[in-house]
Image (cartoon, rainbow, N blue to C red; front, side):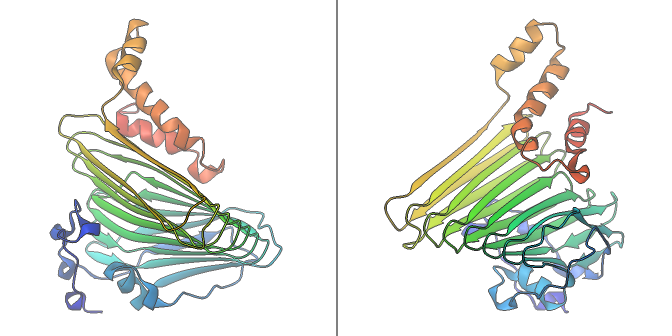
Length: 350
């Protein structure tokens, strides 16, 4: 793969507005691979990779050229008894890695998958992951992505889920690492009664940037989606959230909710939130909400008036802000340390 043959997007394009895409020197990276380990997948079969022609951007297309595939097929009527854990450890400096995870949940099956991305500070890398989730009728899929990349890594990823009749997909993204990390998270509700929940927690400090683009697409009647993304930025860090709810003519009697909340913890920090609706039919229930602002001074004052030091008060308010998201996370070992990792970013453990 010759990286220089690819035409990169620019920040002049609406979907890349506010991004740092202009800083990416694609030619400076060489093909490489992560050290990938999979546990808890006994009993699951291989899954087919989707059609590369459906890639939503150049980076997903690059992944499709030579992906390192982990395929998980859950047989019909099976509740997989273990959490599947997929760890990608990126340890080559200057490498481009293209992991692809495919989860194919057959009719009336259930599975939980946790995918983690890790690298050491000082390891310069470009990670281009793609996740394909296919949930057949009445299937139930829980997927958790945890970004613990080092400060010199970039991630530009795509999560795509197709949800069938009466199926449910829950996706969770925990973004704490990387220099610049962008995720496009898309769910398509294609069967009547399909349901999706998208949840994210992101926290950027230093000069980090977290960038999210989400799509909730309702293509069938009586479908439901619920999105909750919460983030915080401190120092000179930045975050961007752009979300779209689209309900097609076939999506009558659907319900769709989109909420994005952001805390700016320093004068030099910056967050942008842009929710959108596109509704092509009547008889639906939709709402979207977004906020960007500093810590609630009333909450801080309440704690300080009871003898809590100012720095501790701020930490408690931020941890409380994230509680709503953390409480949604599945109660499994792989995500049990999320609260402590947020605390470390706040300086609790330093």
